[in-house]
Length: 52
Image (cartoon, rainbow, N blue to C red; front, side, top):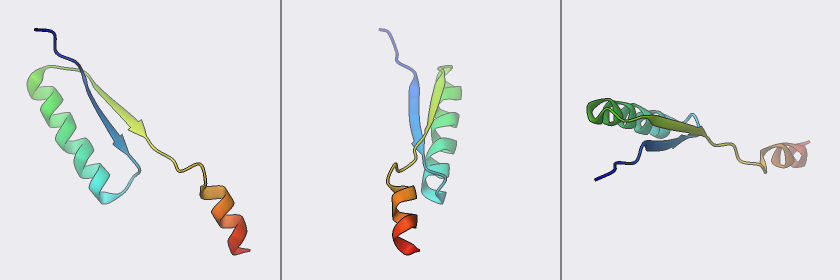
């Protein structure tokens, strides 16, 4: 059976940091690579302009 690598997304929140920690430990135990995706909301700069 072929096993796929782990992937986890983060947006730098406390919850996503916990998910990254969990995924890193799980990938290490399974001896599999881990891909971490940093997620950014593309609407964020537009939201700031509305506040001005």
